[in-house]
Image (tube, rainbow, N blue to C red; front, side, top):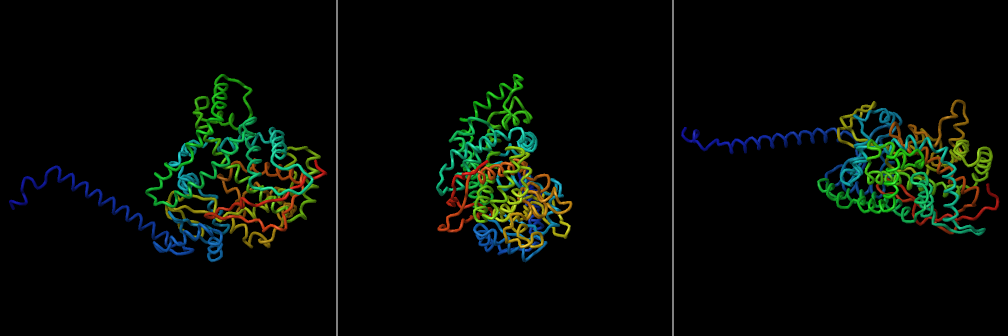
Length: 510
């Protein structure tokens, strides 16, 4: 009894330590319970590959190299269902079938979050781009002013196309091999930036090189960070982020322009340049008090989203027209008619239905990544087919699987350049099946309210680039070369950088 009532037995220190221990035990138990609940729910979703703690890493490395084959295997094995694949740092659940994609499209942001999926996948907080997620006014600017001004600025966009081709492609009557992706990147960068920052910066060699290389640096860094354990990823991303050095480089070019533009905006000038930079200043919550670095970040981000995807699509279209020369004559006839009627204008691009169809088919066949359209489950989410996605899981659709699904496309492995054109010719289908229009069987630009905000600009730009090419050049593939190849990295697709298309100045041109 004396021992039980010893005055030093329950001192305040002992009580504090015991209380802290109890709290820690409760936290651990809670975390373990949450993890077990998550694990049980996730385990109910079938796995493609190994599901074991160690063996799953073997499947994760396989996905890095053969993502398309892995997804195709799951899509065929679990049609209309969800399945999961292991990545190096998480599980990715892939949905299949039109019904599940429609459920994803209809889901609210507090159910399936685009923003949080983007944050996690690209580690934006650690990479220094988190402010773009917090105040995404650049997205609203692309959806609004940029899209609305396409018609009025189109003549300048085409002027840059014409000038860029003269600078980047040989003007010769003989066939010349061109490293296609390298040249299209430079052309697309110039053309896009004519609308983003205007002359003369859009033609500056270092500005072009910066915006082309920053995207590559950013995605390579994201991929490398994923190789590290989760608890180290924020630190690695912060240290390795390419943003600080690229932002400093960008500010050396655009910083004085931004400061001048802000000063003129504050002074109430009404004749500011009609470009993305002005629209960003006007859309910013801070407007005239916006930090120049934040505007420069958004210019880099917009270039990152626009240049490489458009260049890939344009390059694939060039390869496909060279591989299917039977489409050249009917496409040229349509281009000459549309441009003869409306000139080089947005209206003319809208009349080119055969071209729209050809470019969409090129996108379907050649530019379909294994996974895209990602969302994070903000809470447990149940699809209409009963599949339960546990909170915290990232889900994705598969453009490749959708685009080669026989239930959606007849003879899906056959390149049919006028597939969509013929569908639009049917009764009541005139406004459907366009390249710019997302659907349950076509998610090249995403789906729902988070579909790519720049898709209208991208499609019109590709149409103008491709029209200029066919009307001014002949193109073909060298039969002595190996067939053009694409590369797959973690499910993302891109044209091999060594691919070459042959160009020759066309005698008859518009």
